[in-house]
Image 1: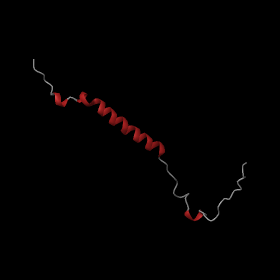
Image 2: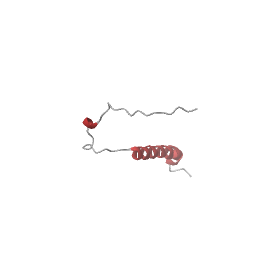
Image 3: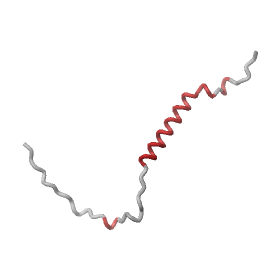
Length: 63
């Protein structure tokens, strides 16, 4: 009896590769979504930033 399926078009052959690529893609998207930050543009005012004042602390000398 002759096979009706083409062995080169068998998707199950590369299923592990498809699974690994899909898993890597979903992990990248999840990591990007967790680390995505948004800021309110009206609350940010560059004129309010004061870089002249530095906080100086007295560091005690340890023995």
